[in-house]
Length: 120
Length: 110
Image (cartoon, rainbow over the protein chains, first blue to last red):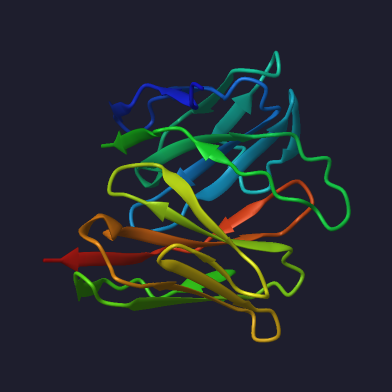
């Protein structure tokens, strides 16, 4: 079974430039997540989609970050304009759908290899 | 206060040693708990879930204490291949939102 695909794997840009990352989740996984992992820290959730709808974007810096998942499959994450502190690995993950029922239930999140962004 | 706190390490241990990692979480409404493993410059991967009754998977034992909001991971008979960062992870429930600790780095040497 193919895993989560991400591209590009590496990107170097100057501050104030824009950049976009692409993610293709595991086939059949309706839930897609974008995380930011700064060196020395754990991944931090930026945005979560269920099919093509957003269920959590509370930690997405909306003045510069945007994400979309138009057809409920692939997703793109964009940063415009980039700042030095955006240097990080951007991880995409996917899982089976979770209906958000009381008590919740966990479906394993499968991560892609990430995109390592350096802003100079 | 961080939502999930871990000792960053590094823990440097010889092969065959037993090593234990601890983690505390702040949200008492947390639903489920996990340990993920992250190799250098790689993505995180689920190592094991953590249950109140304690659970074991080969050389790995995980334990949860809900009253103390404390999670542990014990690795017995350490192998060189165990060298990695171990992330303590809490699921807040709802839409499967995971909160990751910063990780504890383990280095196993010959």
